[in-house]
Length: 453
Image (cartoon, rainbow, N blue to C red; front, top):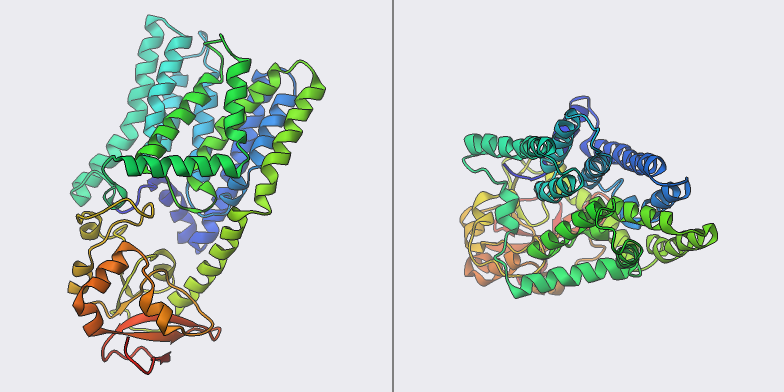
């Protein structure tokens, strides 16, 4: 089993069968689930909290987040997980002693679906079960909570069993590609990523938690303890994996509704409407600018340029025979645009490289490598670093850049310098893409530096 977002792929498949491109379908679904999350947060807060202002505050807390807005159209499963987690948490918060037993089965289904959207979601079941038990302690409810846990756990267990029977391994390949032993360096990297998330939003997420804790001090059965427990659970997971490098804090998307629920409950505690409005205005003033200026939006613009160039590289590779073997690091876009054989040097879609020894803490999710294995497969083309479109060839740069550990592995092997030469593929817009081509291979319109590097 290659990737770990199983349910997201399942939901995209019907669109593809109807002829809708996968990236367009992902944006459609992302928008639908984002609106679903906003609606659910508003309806819950409007129904359960006093007055309309807390509900409006929760929606504003979400809508003013550049992270939430970007990943509406980012193409990944974050908005689906955010919707399911919001649905499950708010559903659990509405449980009372009079709630029928069927609600616990429904909660189990929701959390189960979340856990086959991204595997870490199963970790949110224990704090939810503990909170349900603390709020409704009696023998009958213990059975209901046990049913909830069993139903939720049945989803990832069934998926793992199916993967084991079909692939011979219950875990997705990305687990092996990204897993690193627990170490101080890994935790330090995770702490740096958490600090970056908080700092990019002017420490508003931390401020919401601290303010809520002060407002609810002594109230051990307050609703906000469950969203807070979910945030803490995610933070521990985030530290364990050493953080994530994708733009605009993509892994925090499912946590944003939890912060919004805390903020709504905080606003509810404010007795003076003018002060509550001031809190909302302060949140907007501190968080909204991150959507328009700063390193996140700059990185996003650069990312857009990279993706556009990578699409052109992929379409250029489509001019080669389908039997062509291309070894590359960032394979998603270039693989989408053609039918050549792709060898993923980062191991996300390659079982051998994912399990290769020698990984060290570096760029999160990009540590796997086995240059000797890559060269043993005799690829026709090797793309070091990221697939790029450049306006002017620069052989000195392209032969000297360090890149990922997978690139450095190749450079250390004498076969790479002996058997491959730098070429610049001509792209449809007149730009060039640097690649290393097996000696003697005809790749069509390409420029070769006069001197071999």
